[in-house]
Amino acid sequence: MNPNRRRFLTTSSLALAAATVDLSKLFAQAGRPAPQTPQTAFIPLRGTVGVFTGQGGTIGYHISKEGVVVVDAQMPVTAKICLEGIKERDGGRMIDILVNTHHHGDHTGGNPVFKSSVKKILAHANVPELQRAAAARQAASRPNDPAPEIVVADATFTSTWREDVGGEWMALKYYGAAHTSGDAVVTFEKANVVHMGDLVFNRMHPYIDRPAGASIANWIKVLEHTVADHQNSTTYIFGHGSAKFGVTGARADLLYMRDYLTALLGFVRGEINAGKPKDVIVKITDPLTGFPDHGPLIERVLTPAYEEVTA
Ligand SMILES: [Zn+2]
Image (cartoon, rainbow, N blue to C red; front, side, top):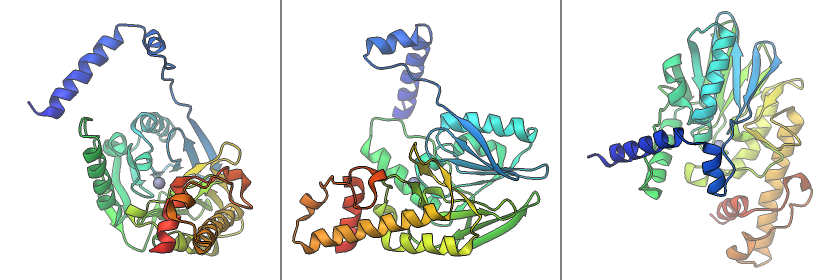
């Protein structure tokens, strides 16, 4: 028997067994809280555009009588909730385009849920391969887990893309390597709203995916170019944000993120110049001077910063 099939049957029969008992008791016995339905919300922003929050990266949406766009797909559970909410709001029509701002699982994990309801999935040309490579790495690191289903974009662009979707001009632009090497900035021109994907972690330490081609030095420039290409009044949606500062904001928040990345590189460069070895530098937990909202420094940002400075 195909091992995946056997595993599927095992988990299915477990699921059936679990369905007949009180789940909360089962979890309480295991010393864990019962899983709860994730908190989700649809938040209208401006014109036809809004943001859906659930688990993983934020989802942007544009819904008009003539066209529907969804930006990012989160994970399967909240993707289902989002899709149901979109169908309520658009009268059940096909979604014209699902955009993936980049390949990470918390932005593309819901692609299989959306697939049959969207005409196409659009992403930067590097995204499908990055997504397959990440899935292969994950499968290799967890050989006993069933491989999650992946669905990759079936339409791609390389530098810019622009189209009228139901009366709203939507533009995608690739500014070069930053958070990964496939980050698209998605602009809804009439609504004057931009989805940044993970190019902004609002007042949080970001994830910097060097194996996927990330560049902190270029990320700094990407944020500056994005601000220059938009207006003072543009509203930005961020992939992630701290509870205090949230997942939407303005150009000042992009420049704050730029300053944080500049300070991070400068700090690590200084520590290297002071003669400290890598294993000491990556364990530093003092907050980055001038950026107290981010909390203590963490290895997740210090390691890629060290590797970039010493590359
Ligand atoms: Zn990401």
